[in-house]
Image (tube, rainbow, N blue to C red; front, side, top):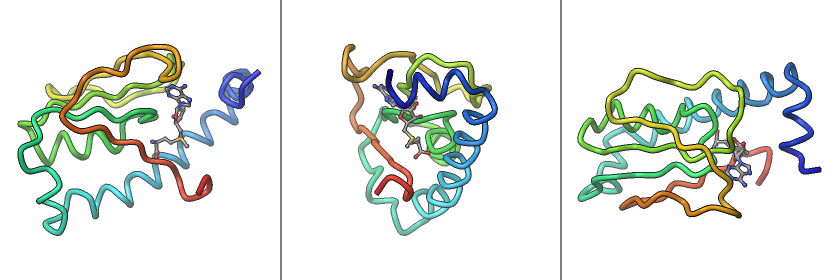
Length: 115
Ligand SMILES: C[S@@+](CC[C@H](N)C(=O)[O-])C[C@H]1O[C@@H](n2cnc3c(N)ncnc32)[C@H](O)[C@@H]1O
């Protein structure tokens, strides 16, 4: 059983974990969508956040760049995801077993506790 499968059996642990991931993403997103990183997004029309959790990072990018079509590719799970942005969608899947959706840019962000 994978770490992710095990965690899915513990809803409170899962909620804590994704809350921590989201908090980290909020912090990093503030830098990523600031003026200093504008060059990174030049010419990008679509972006896929692989393993993007509840969508915190992708949502920040989608808000800052309404012309970028953002997709979160994530294991199907019962977590509250960010909804309501016209240029943000979620696709459920396993990156090791299924094709990752096409995007001009792929984002694969891990949290500092993993690195
Ligand atoms: C360390 S968390 C990082 C979450 C988010 N990118 C962030 O930085 O806040 C890793 C994420 O990858 C997802 N994940 C793990 N294995 C995956 C797989 N095989 N396919 C797709 N997503 C996966 C997990 O559910 C989790 O949301």
